Image (cartoon, rainbow, N blue to C red; front, side):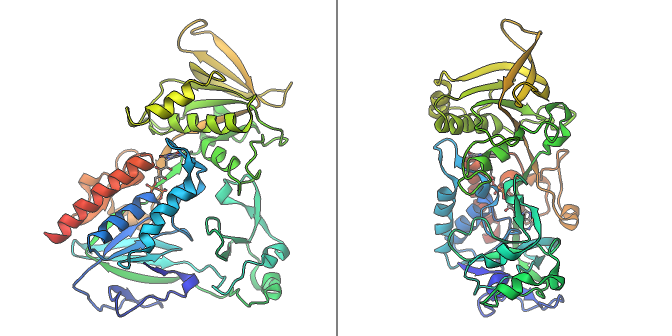
Length: 453
Ligand SMILES: Cc1cc2nc3c(=O)[nH]c(=O)nc-3n(C[C@H](O)[C@H](O)[C@H](O)COP(=O)(O)OP(=O)(O)OC[C@H]3O[C@@H](n4cnc5c(N)ncnc54)[C@H](O)[C@@H]3O)c2cc1C
């Protein structure tokens, strides 16, 4: 694997990778290579899988990832159901295969902006975003300590602040910092530059545009969480101890905002009595009419986080139906969770979540859909409520959006795309990791077959 990006000074090996039609000033050079590579846009688990499988069959691949590191949303997940392995070690397993294949070139901090051309002769415009911190950074952290600007920590879904110069999450032990230039005061401040004994900071770095020539393209641009603040009755943003499922993943992460402790946001007290609210906005025509298929198992997995952390914890899962995205495959995991008598299930619909003045926790008004009390609103109190919000397709750049055919929910339908452009993973459907990888493997096979025809 060849790793490129601003950290590596965009050092593309021109002799091998002559399909990079670049002019780092912005124009287009056209040294054409008859072995046109496959460009994979999106370096989450789906894009990584396509890249690895295609390269294993002898195809040259360029993997383009907008973030500073590969991994996509898996980087922010604590454990993966059904095995409850650590997400970072699962990811590392895939990355090891990627690193060992010299046919894969990786561009990180690289936004795919547009696609032009036809099958066999595409041009993909990519913006390489600067990180402003060079490879000789030693991770001493002095820059962040003197930085006077605090910003929301996006990696942790704004549950804590970070500095405008910060360590890139997911980089393990490698020294990798970056600057959020939209909030940094630049030369007006310059404190980080002054304190950096290694002279690793270059505030004057500029974005660069390159154009990749490509025979075929796979889009693996992934998903975003549905904006929970839109579901007004469920209190997200209004009631302090209502969080969403993606936030719960960060609450249990050792590098998360609470150092891995499940604490409620209002007062950092241990949250032992938790209500999981299923279908939060999903299967609802005012929000997401579809089922994201993963949220039920995600909540059950998150219930195990709480049960493992606090043996005296109590969980209530309020659901309409329990969806298992792969019947048969996850039965063992489901049985383990369902057998726990400290986890209660209530088939019902939550009509309102309010702050509970007595406990500073949450009060949920629930209409039971079954059994005793069916149809009569019941009140459930908890320390914290976790909304199982669904997945929406990631918003593409406007130019990419014009080229792609989107379905009514914004996902990309693989059948209706231009010849030579393939879609995979959660860019086409809200899959879990296993299903994303299965889909990506199939996409890699289809793509290779078309390349070889
Ligand atoms: C709370 C929660 C917990 C979950 N837990 C589990 C679990 O335990 N087990 C499980 O199997 N599944 C789980 N999932 C599902 C899992 O997260 C997804 O299946 C997985 O992330 C899909 O990977 P992907 O590569 O399709 O998308 P992503 O992970 O979103 O990756 C897409 C990548 O594309 C990049 N990208 C987008 N646009 C561009 C562009 N224009 N140019 C360059 N790059 C671009 C993005 O930066 C991103 O890195 C969970 C989901 C949620 C909501």
